[in-house]
Every structure is written in C-alpha cells, then in structure tokens.
Amino acid sequence: MWRLILTVISALACLGVLAQTWPADTFRWFYNDSIPTKELKAKAQSGDPIAMNDYAASVYLTGRTADEMAHKSRKHWLRAAKAGAPRALLYVAAFDSDADARWLEYLELIYRSEDGDAVCCVADFITERLIKRFRNLDNSYVDRFYLRAARLGNKKAQREIAGRFVFAKGNSGLKTDIDSAYHYLKKSGTYKANLFRTWAFKLYPLGGDTVGMIDFRPADAAAILRYVIADNEDGSGESFLSGLLLGDLYYEHFHDWEAAFACYKAVACDDEWPDGEYTAYLRGRAYERLARCYRFGRGVEVDAAEADRLTRLAAQSGNQNAEIIIDSLIHAE
Image 1: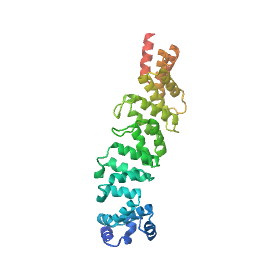
Image 2 (image 1 turned 90 degrees about the vertical axis):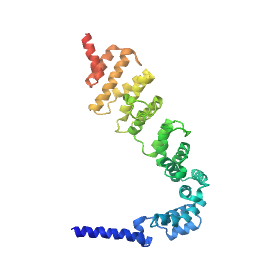
Image 3 (image 1 turned 180 degrees about the vertical axis):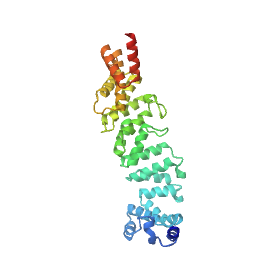
Image 4 (image 1 turned 60 degrees about the vertical axis):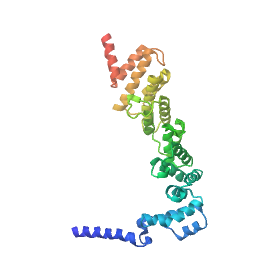
C-alpha cells in the first residue's frame, strides 16, 4: 500500500517538474483554458483592441514561470493599451515601468471607457493598496470609479457603492444618500432585508446596542428601516421586526407619537407570522408600547381601559415591563 502511495506521489512530482520544462502546449490544460489561438492572434493583428487585450492575456497565462509570463506578454499588453483596450491600460498603468509618467492618464482613459469590470478593478486596486503607485490616491478616486462601474452594470461595484452611499468616508466627496444605496444594492442582486437592516444598527443604537455603531444618524437609520418594511420580503419576518424597531426610533428619539403608534399597531395586528417564542416577544413589546400610547395620549386619545387591556396582553406574551406594571396595578387595587 505504501509503495503505491509513494509511486503516486513520485508521479505527481515528476509531472510538476515536467510542467515547468516542457512546451506550454503540452500541459496547457494544467495552466488555463485561455490559449493564444491562431484565430485570436489574427483578430488581434487586425487591430481589434479587445482581441489585442485578450491575446495579451492568453500569452500571459500560458507562461510557465512568472518571468516568462511577464516577458512574453509585455509587448502585447503595450500594443493593446496603445489601441485603447481598458484592461490592457490597467495592466500597464499598474505594472509597467514605462507607464511611470502616464499612469494617471491611463486611469482616466479606463474611467471613460464602457468596460465596467476594468473600471471596478481600478477601484479595487486602490482600496486593497496592492499597487505601490496607486497608494497615494484618496477615497475620491475609489468612490468615483466604483460609481462609474456601478452605472455600467458591474455587480460588485453596485454593492460597494451602496455601502459607500450609507457610510461615506472622508475626503471622498460622496454624500450620504440612502435612496441611491438602496437602488444600487437592489440592482447588485445581493440585497437581503436582514443585511440591509443591520446597516441601520450601525447608524443608531436600536435596542440599546452600540457595539457595531459607526455613526449617530437616526434619520438615516429610519430611512433604511422604512425600505425594509416596504419590501416586505417573503418569509424573512423583517417587516415585522423592522416595524417594531422603527416604532421605537420614532417613540424614543424623534418623539413622533403618531408615527410610533402606527408602527406599533401594525406589528400588534400583523397575524402573518406564526405563533412562536420570538414572535410573541416582539408582539408583546408592541402591546406594551401601545399601552403607553393609550395611557399617556401619545399619538392617540387617552384610554386607560385600553391601556390596561394591552398591558395584560403584553404580560401574557412575557413582556417584563408589562408584568411590573400589572403587579403595580394589582397592589394599587
């Protein structure tokens, strides 16, 4: 058994050595499916910028060592960049010493192109700080390129710019825009109600939790919660939870009693969600807050009897505040 294992290991080792010394075509499946075919070469030689870029990439990917890859492909990258291929321009701007004087100009050419992937890659390179000459570029470049790529339909850029519209960074020139954030997040195909709701937690200590809070922006937190509620994402339960959180924000921070009352009533009357411990907890909190509204005339006419009824419902749902109030009412009697 051990002989068989050693034989297999030896064979794999030999294959690895041979893959570095035999002609690239021998093991082309081992490297990449992008092979510099005669058809692609002919199209590149005809002056087609995209074909020139693809041919440069295929030559690069079939090199057997890093040095060979760079050496064999450099002239093709330069030709493709000269022809205006955006991805070739990015390669030259990032890696080629001949671009030292013109790399910013190349980035602007990429920005004005219609290649959303290349435009997004520029923003990625700046953000990741992997390219030395890109490291001094500020957030205004990142936001500008992500926004352009998002408009061109790049999904990654759409999600990135959505986050930047919510959590705008200094010196970027990008203003907070919850509407645009929601728009691009939906277009990216990565929208989830529960994830978008967590962004609200970063802007206001909902439930008193300040651990993940980045900034104190209650109005923007409310805007996010309103979008989540309006979406009413099937099966997520987010409209139920977010309605309660939004009610708390209206009640505790804005003192918009009518809006708070409307949120709590919507949660209390929502029978879409099946009975369960968590649902009971949320509904119990809504009952307790509605009772406060009735007891103190906040967003509704004072109605002590209704306040007592809702308080008892809240206590039955396990709400501790309601239980304390019930105890005090009993002792008062």
